[in-house]
Length: 112
Length: 114
Image 1 (cartoon, rainbow over the protein chains, first blue to last red):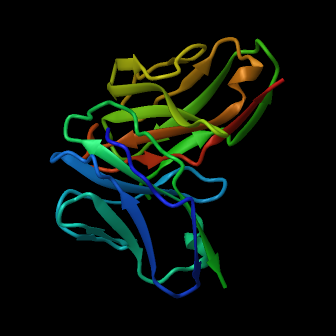
Image 2 (cartoon, each protein chain N blue to C red):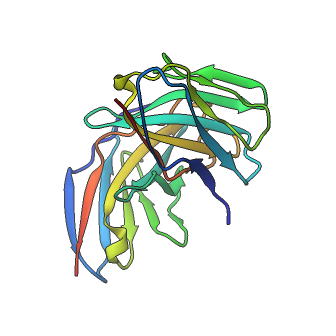
């Protein structure tokens, strides 16, 4: 799977939107962009994934650049419960049973 | 509620005493996997299973065994635990392996081997 680059940490005020960036300049045409998060003392949690078009679900939105070399996870209204480490991961269409590779991620702090 | 259930949540044991960490999912997922998480090393895959009776080694399988006799269960067995197996363990499942779905992880088992 291709490499991703994320900021080490970000901070947000509660109830404000949060934009978490991810760079993946070596992405291939068949790589899906996945986002997970890990809250303190919990297992990783799937957030969202997409290939080319922007995606929305009940947790977040994923905005994918037109050239697909970067993407942004958008939390529309941060809550204290969103404080976690967020991981951006690329998964190839042939990734099959290859394990998820979590990098260092972005540690999001939410201030009340 | 769709979930992956691991037990126990915390376990302290002595070197050499066999133990089993259970993992069960209620989503009829074909794919299941075990990871361990260590500071500075991130998540590393131990074993995975593509379906019933189909298991294979991940990146760090030494000292571990698994079985998949039923679709819902995927226990992790440490026949003779050693202190270097002290870690945080996560079980995960997916409908099918690959990029089309997202993994569901359990809440974790913190194992200490003394």
